[in-house]
Length: 95
Image 1 (cartoon, rainbow, N blue to C red):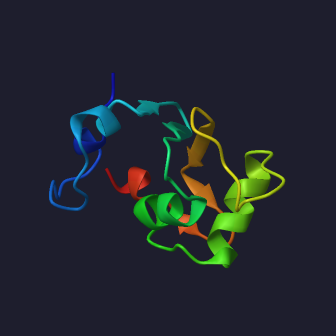
Image 2 (cartoon, rainbow, N blue to C red):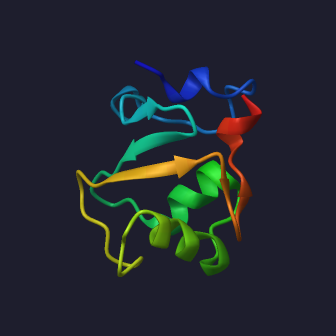
C-alpha cells in the first residue's frame, strides 16, 4: 500500500498519524483519499494541492460527484487527480 510519506521528498510536509497514512492508495492518474471524521474538502485540497480555497475544492468536488462540498462523510473515497483546473498540479505529481 502506498503511504503518504512515500509521496513527498519532504517528510515534514504534513504530519499524519499512521492510521491516516493508510487512507491513501495510488492510481495511474490519481490517488484515492478516504475521508475520516472531521475532514473537510478545504483541508484535503490544501494538503494535496496547496490551495484550500473554494476555487480549488469546488472543482475537486465536481470531479468526484460531490454535490455539496461542505458535506463529506467519513468513508467517502475522494480521487486526488494529478491535475485539476482551478487547483493546478497535485503535490502527488511532484513525487
